[in-house]
Image (cartoon, rainbow, N blue to C red; front, side, top):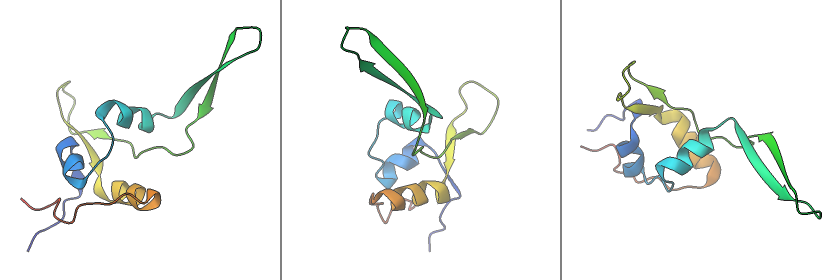
Length: 94
């Protein structure tokens, strides 16, 4: 019998079948999105809008710079379910 963990680190996300890179995941966690639009006169307009669909926020296990970041499994699974992403069944097995 396997017990499902409450938190998951980056390697655990990959075992779950996480489809995004580290960089894209951090972009999806951001509170705002910067969009650019080219105007007719050739100038560029930048707008900052709130992120309509953020990935769950991560947390650090300690205060040290190299402490791993972790996510709550329940929030990650809810995000995957709302987006139709498949999760591997054996991701929590040792």
